[in-house]
Length: 81
Image (cartoon, rainbow, N blue to C red):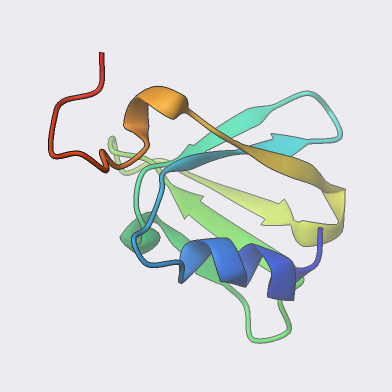
């Protein structure tokens, strides 16, 4: 996945939490736009976790992202089941 493509999801309004899927099978959650940072070239991605740990990733090894429907923003003002 290109850094430019990933940046579109990071800057989306409203932000939707997502999971980064890696070629080695790892799945890295991204809780908010303050938890992820791209290098200026877009080749390196740093994802922080709530426990202050972080993962440094190479964007070309990202196979895609998935969205957790339970964390998607509610459109009717009601809580998601």
